[in-house]
Image (cartoon, rainbow, N blue to C red; front, top):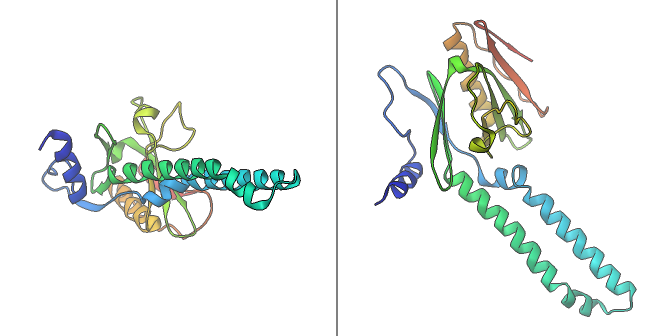
Length: 223
């Protein structure tokens, strides 16, 4: 078994790439839901809607020109196949992205193990996390962006798609498409509060675009 196969096997089993230091323990471990990535990261739903609209317009245009409905549908086979191929490819990329990603929250840090071809592990100690946010969706899934402090930055392309969209100059690592995101955010909030030596706040379920838990100067507040 080569190195890449070993990494893939470990990702499937779960677990961090290395044993934790003495006294540190895992509070949560999981990964993104590929369906959430397909819809919200790779926009497979929008692409499908685009092709359906394009197909309907083409059939209607052919029918207006006097073409029979059957002939119009037959003439649209190539376009239908192209749409199915495009959506299928996006879903496949989303599946591979989710399969090769692993997130973990410990008592000391957030760990992100990502990468389809080349697996990279990012260790984000709590002292380097200035704030954490929650983007909660109606189905309970969501994203948790992490704003980093200090001058050190992780390149946006090295993180993508596990990065907050459009934050290119100051990239923010993001735990994406997480099931039960509010519970995970609560675990992270409590861990950050414990690290900062203050009382934790419980995030209230909300469909608002984002809720932020800030940890600065040993204080924590929800915005």
